[in-house]
Amino acid sequence: MPMLTPSPRAQIDLETPLGRVEQQLSDLQAALRGDDVHALESAATGLHRALASAVDQFRVAARRGAVPRSMRERLATAGARVAAQREALARATASLDQAIEVLLPSQVATYQASGVASRPTSRGALVA
Image (cartoon, one colour):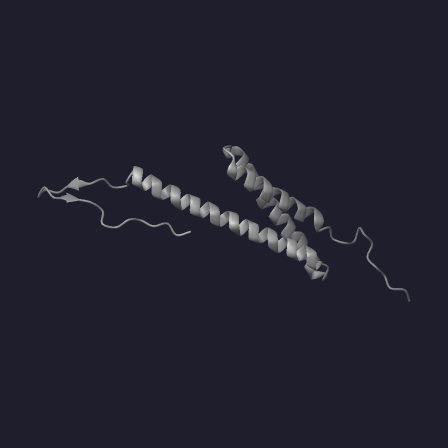
């Protein structure tokens, strides 16, 4: 009895969704360097959709035991790039929040009835 091999159509295409994720990551990185808020939003949305699609495809392929090592490594690399971009964005947001706090304090000094100035004694902190 001959062994049946899956036809190319039966195999799950992992290259296409993973390629989309990698392209969207590059687009997002370019948008972060640029000055176009709409491009940034579009790239972030595109990345979210590409990641969701890729995860679904990889999940199906994993159930069938058909995820090549090279694809797993590329997906892990893409995941690391996402994490690095998220960390960089969180740091930039924290720096911006600190600059805004310096320029526009949330509470200004006020004087009490005794004439002593009262200022906030503690500063807020952003946890990313």
